Length: 225
Image (cartoon, rainbow, N blue to C red; front, side, top):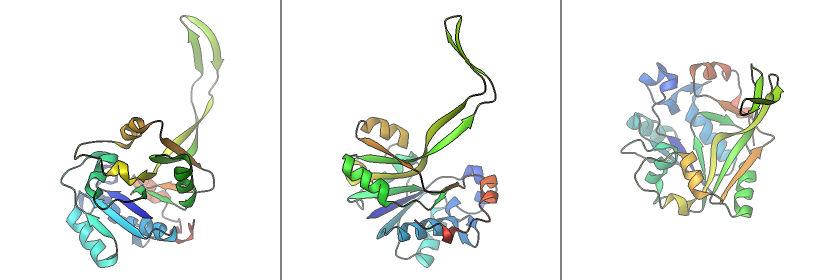
């Protein structure tokens, strides 16, 4: 199985750290974020890993060539969005591939979404997690001016995207060099899009400075699939 790590973004939410280095090289514990992601992919049995860069991509390429020489690196000519960036690996792509954003740490077992992807005949499988949000206000259900129901500070359950996907290489090979976000691609591929809702996995968002502080004590090596 192959996997692509999307590492092209500007990392604006992690400034000022990302004024000096690309987001994948921001430290989590004693190692860069991308080192933890590569380790997790290896623990999942991923044989080939590719990283797609853009912002400070020469710095990222230098780190990977020195510390992870078995990882393929692809430069981008411009930012194309979370799906469009895969255009730069279209010739490398084959089979069913994992796609991972660089702002998530997880112990997800990739076998489960991969099994769903293949058994359902999906072209794209989105890894989701349940998220519960409590509203601060009462919600009024109306029909015209008439009140139909009043729900006081309800709790609503959602399934949110984790930024991890399984995608078929046939989709990647058709991507042009144009801007395309993953939600737009997913909509265009419906109904051949599956959602795997992870029940026994941790997901740590590391997209902001506050997130970095919250995961400072997480022992990433203990997050085994």
